Image 1 (spheres, each protein chain N blue to C red):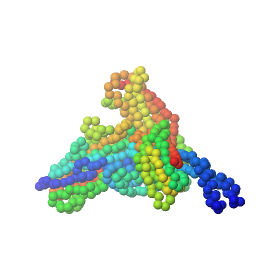
Image 2: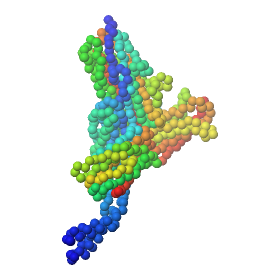
Image 3: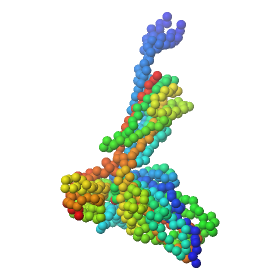
Image 4: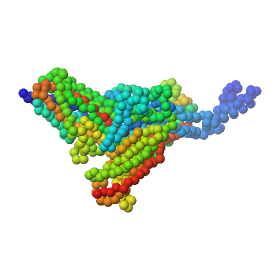
Length: 152
Length: 175
Length: 276
């Protein structure tokens, strides 16, 4: 037997399954920012908007299959308990890998989706539409969206 | 067996012995917007159109006539707003015979306004467009104001044929 | 000799109905902080035709005339006694074409003199919108005819430029009410206190002898210096007798962003009213 075998075996044992956090990482890049909206006028941000669309990034093993779940709000909260409706259309989600040749894919953010990764680093973009009422109180409104990425 | 082949075999064995659990990671991003309220919109609904007139015969259009000019204004509920006009005194022929003009005037009863209702008859208030007035937007949910204007033209007997035009400017000021 | 002349008098546009053409301006009051020296408005064209828009700045502030109606007092060349910002607030861009359903942000930049004292300075923004040229019909004996049409609407909104710590308030006096037809005309003297314009709401409630509110009015108000405005309360159908009119001025405006409104304690007053 090779005299290095015990060392190699110990090394191999040390290379066992990695912790979950090392294989899958999700980070936030940019808020979904509607900016200034006019009362009574619906405002839409497309997922391809270069500065206002929400952007996540996640890293997972190439060729793995992941499921994306978005927990979406139905309204933004504003001053004095005012609310403003927000809606997400069937193509307001966009996923694209960072490897050369990756094809952007639109998806419905209200439904979970399974995606076969072609690159380790991937980006998810989110758009939406807010509909302020004609008498919507002026001020700042906010909500949150949660992306859950699950390796299948 | 070479050491490398043996190491690879061990790695495969280890991997098979400890299956990977399904992994899920979540992250929350903010969504934000800033609402600006207090909008004001002035929309021209209809032009002031005298149609066909006859040289030497004055023609009048009342503010509640079918050809009267009309605006719709939307603003802050119940807010007062100053309404004023910049009115022409001459219309210019812009067709084949430039330089021809036609006098126009706006009598003291040639304008009306009304809150919320797009109808110059009934509850509309008459005012002199030369002096302007202060009107008021309706309450929620219909904070609108309607304004109508008529006028009077005085074509000379020898008025040249063509299309005569001018400009009316309506100004609305918030306090 | 009279001649029947085919004339199309298009003062504002072609005969008949236009698609509604105008520009939306938001907000209707711009408040600029000296620390940032900038503000903005949004213009939106809700129509189906492009609109040509131009922006201008001048000095003016609201007053009330002898009848109590609001009017805008404008001064072409304000002297140093008037708190004018018109000479050093600029709008960018000043001219634009807004396509159908298009919006445009107009930035306002203040370049005050270096020795500007703390206080509030006023100006008015004039947003003029002009619609496009519409096709025309020619007169029978004139051949091909082109008609240029001008549809102009002008929106005048206030600008308040604020430097330093400012306060506001209002004192009221001499409230009186007179029945005119089916309305009660209410007038009072409003005097601004503090160092900035008072932007608030005036509310009135007419109560009968049991204390029940039988009529009311509410209106946004702005007191820059002194005013004696007129308000009306509908009183048609109310029986003759004694009533109490309660008036309140407060700074809780919901058409302005709350962080921009200078707060002041509510001011209340009341007067007895006898309806004939």
